[in-house]
Amino acid sequence: MMIKISRFCRHPMTMGERALLTALALTMLLLLGACDQGSEQTAEAPPPGVLVAKVQNRAISETVEYVGRTVAVNDVSLRAQVEGYLLERRFEEGGDVEQGAELFVIDPALYEAGVAAAEGTVAQTKAALARANKDLQRYKTLIKKQNVSRQKLDEAESDKLQEQANLKSAEAALQKAQIDLSHTVIKAPFKGRIGRASASVGDLVTRQSEELARLVELDPIYANFSVSERDVIEAKRGFQQAGEDESELTKLEVTLRLPEGSLYEHVGRLDFIDNVVDRKTGTVVLRAKFDNPDKLLVPGLYVSTMLGREETTDKLVIPQAAVQEDQAGKFVLVVGPDNKVELRHIETGESHAGVLVVRSGLNPDERVIVQGIQKVRPGIVVDAKLAPQPGAEKAAEAPQATMTDAEKGAKTAAAGEESESPDVTAADDAAAEQEAAEEQEAAAVVAEEEKVAPTVDATAGTADGAMDDTRSDPGADQSKED
Image (tube, rainbow, N blue to C red):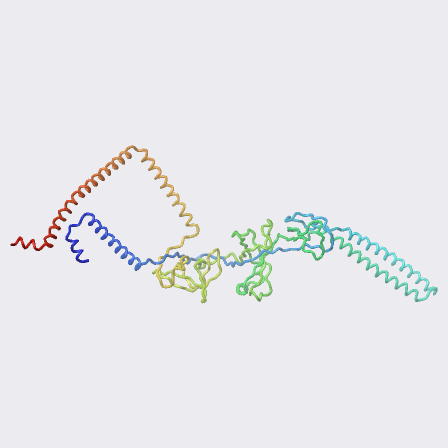
């Protein structure tokens, strides 16, 4: 290999060989540069980027928010109290009904007959009682004249008492028959909204049948919610320290937050606190009463109840996204002035509209990581940027979009002007002609070099051949010397 290389080096290189060596050298340099650049990037990896939020002081009202559920003040399941075929349904499903409105009618024929029979029994018993009274009066007159025995008088008195008892039984039977007849018409016990009817006209209904419909009262309406026993004790102690009676708890205002996030326009009042703590959950049930004139609230609706007073106090708050929890409790990742990450446990309070109150562990204006937590660990340096406030991104995007549209319009106008301007077109044509002339000159130079290169190679080849012949024939040199 060394012999070949040294021999190759003795020959003058052609232009093709020079180009090949130059290309190889450039390739090696590029590869070495890429390797050096890769090692530098690996050695100098940039710190991970995170978004942070500052710990802020915010005026928070003395309110606590709990999950609650709306409950109707009056809620009744309408059922049949007598057996019979359903003749009529006198309401529209889902409509409002007044108190005493007739809702269902059951066939009353059998019960009307029962009332008539009971009335006949009562009349018969009254007649028997009247005869017993007359017999008794007659025996009383005869006993004075000693025309009848004392036994007959006692029997007359007993007959009267029996007929009086029979009359009471007959009247009770009549009353029961009348009640059964009245139950053939099912009426609304109060004003409210009725639901779907589960029985159709012609169905046989009995006391064991399912509910025919459900009627609820919507105005006013209750909201039940559970409060931890700790909060109840703290509230009672607070009232005692303020010199207020514990009964004042029932005068606290309660605000509702509806499922879509809006606040209910009517403010309620706390009107009931349960007298026991649930053993399973450790909570106490509270109830608030709200006006509902527009029938916006319906029973069974999940709401957020905010209980408290109107006074506000300044408290430290952080976004809820920054808080994590481990076995030791809740913690956050704090970015210090030197951009190093620090794990710090905190004590939190109530939540308000996406932020969490911090009772201890943080100071105002400290930075906590809210995004990119999974990329960092305590002790490393990070590239911290302040997280945008809600709504700031949309405000920033609008001008950018406007500028982009303006730039596009400017480019379009410039393109139109260039296409319409004859001077610009002529300049472009002249530049194209100049480039074509330069290409032709370059091609002529290359052709000239190719013509010269074979002559040089041939001369070099002849000289090398002569030298090789001289070396290969030492006898010829000896003859010249002789």
